[in-house]
Amino acid sequence: MLGCGDAGLEAAEQVIRAGLLRLGGSMLGAVLSADRGHRGSRVPCGNGHEAAFAGHRDKTLDTVLGLVTVTRAWYHCAECGHGLAPRDAELGVAGASMSPGLAAMNDIAAAAGPFAGAARLLEELAGIRLTVKRVERAAEASGTAVAEAGRERAALIAARRLVPLPPSPLPDKLYAVIDGTGVPMTGRETAGRPGKGEDGRARTREVKLAVFFTQDGLDKDGHPARDRASTSIISTFEPAAEFADLVKAEGIRRGAGHIRQFTIIGDGATWIWGIAAAKFPEATQIVDLFHAREHLHSLTRSLEFMLLDRKDEWLAARLEDLDYGYIDGIEAAVRQYPLEGVKKDEVEKELGYFLNNAPRMRYHWFRSRGLFTGSGVVEASCKTVIGQRLKQSGMHWTVAGADSITALRCREASSTWEAICNKPDTQTRTA
Image (cartoon, rainbow, N blue to C red; front, top):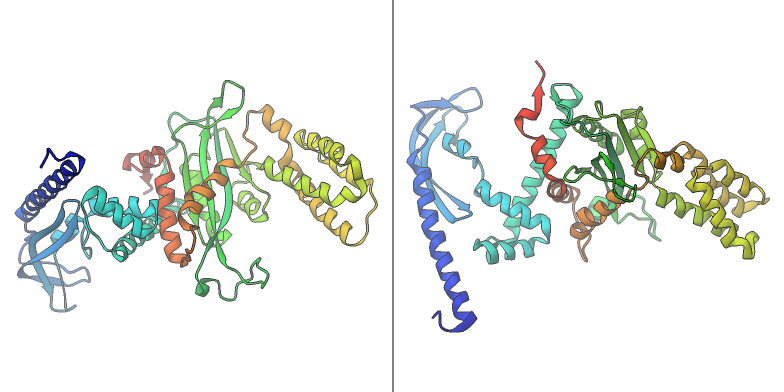
């Protein structure tokens, strides 16, 4: 068989792998069943009663080695009318039919692409066959648990019942870059919500993201450089008030109260600065320079009927004003042109963007302090973490399903710093 070229070798590989998986599965089952979980004649049922030993029962699990059967002690509570196996809880499979190891593999595959493709990947790469619906349900359950754990951690930090230790060594600068993006939803999830479509109906729901990272220095060209492996990402479909609590907790966890320079960057949306002012009033606020330039181009288009062939020259001068944070110069240049009606409203709206954000547009000063002035990191996250997985053709999500997969993708996209930070000895509970 091995002399038949690639096809023969591939077939041999498949046969040997299948055999090794069966052998490994039988060994794992034997190891797990060696301790059958007998914990005496009675055990607590979890509801204030005692459950009595009622013999042994088998449980079949899908694992990374295939189907495995575990024999464990079974207890029954006469008061509650339900049974339990203490061994299941010890193995982390209480109420589950998938092992933790396989669940982790499934999370990675389902977070990476559509559920059908994830099922195919698991079968092709790991030799594990799961239905598409099983892949979906398991991944969404894991993602829901991840999101809930994040909210619980945020609540504990807010209540000072969980106190993260500051990073060591302490970075010089910490950033929180915030934005939101729409995710296509089912009709039920958008019913009655106003939208931007021609019919005024919503087609999407906004997921809010915050990307945290640190900076210790500049690159060889003198530009700010993100510290490698320092990124953590949080997200939610909840309103801004709830998201603010998550941002606050993540900022505390990342050491905002200890780091010399904490900066929040956004695109100018009011809800972003509301979070910054309420949760981190001491932080430096910066409007993303690219968005500011876009608004300046829009302002120029509103005035082009008066600027005529001077439009390019006028825009170049205003861009220079913006780069130096000279918002008064932009206003003075606009006020030279008397406007009325619709055009006046257009120009006043665009000019208001600059006037309202003037303190956040001191770009020359920000650059002189070695600070980032762009929100590219969160823009990229909106495209890669959210867009590449949740905005594919034909996709329509429920909020719960999208939130769970987003939680998995944020966890995957966060750097190894996230895993280090979550070790027990990097945080402490208050008395």
